[in-house]
Image 1: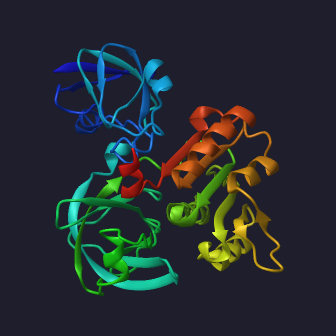
Image 2: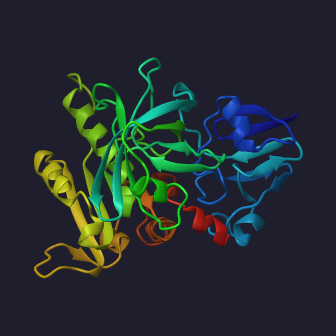
Length: 351
C-alpha cells in the first residue's frame, strides 16, 4: 500500500498498486473531484508534487502530452507506484451521499424534441435516494456496459412516488438510446448506480454564477436552477442572500433548446435569474436571441469573470473552449470553473 497525501487540504489515504487513485480516495471517503471515471472528461485532473504515478489510458483532450510532462494526471485512470503527494481540490461533504445500485421503474416517457426524450424513473420506496442537484447516475445495461446520464430533477421535487427525470438525446446506433427511442415501455425495470460526480453548486460561495449549457447539457443545469430557487424560497431569516445566475443555453437550432419556454417562464418568476438563448446555425425568422458560439456570448457580456463562478455542461469541445477562453481572456480563476462534459461512447472510441 502507498500513502497518498492531498495538498493543500493535508488529507491522506492509502492506495493499492492495482487501484486507481480515484477509487482509493473514494474508499477512504476523500472527496477528489471527478466526472466520467473513464479518462475522457478531465474533471479529475490533478498534479503530482512528488512520487511516482503510472498514468493509464485516456483521451488527449482530457490530458494533453504537455500537461503530462508538467506533472498533471487523471486520478480516475492513474495508479500509484510509490508514496505520492498530489495537489488537488477537495470536494467537501461528498461522502455524505453514498453511492448505491438500485432497481428503478420507467414511470413516464415524453418527447421533448424529435431527438430528446424525457425519461422519468421511479425510485425504490424502501431506500431513500440522496443526491445533489447536478449529479448523474450510471444506467447499468444487461451486457455489463454503463451509460451515464445527469439527473434533471432537484432533490426536493421528486414527487410521490419519488422519481427522477433524465433528458436523453437519441444517438443513432447507441446501445441504450436506440432502446429508449424504440423498445422502452413504461413500467419496465432498469438498474442504476449513483449518485455520481462532483458537478453541483458550491454553497460556500457568494459569487454570482454563470450557467453554460449546450444541448442536453441543460439537464443538470435545470436541476441546479430548481434547487437554487427552492433554497432561496425556504431560507431562514439571516441566511446569505441568493446569488444571481445567468443561464446561457446554446444549440444549433431552436428545437435543440427543447425547454426554451420553461426557461423564459423561470426567468420571469425569478428576478435574480437571466436567460440567454444562443443559436449557432439556423436562427428562425424573427429570432431575437443571440447567435454564434454560446461561450462567446458569455465573453461578450462578461469580459471580466474574475469575480464569478462558471458551471458548464455539454459537449467536450464547448466545455474545453469555455474553460480555456474564460481563464485566459476573461480572468476567471481556474478553480472557479466547474464542468461536466457529455462524452459519448463514440467520443471515447475516437481516443
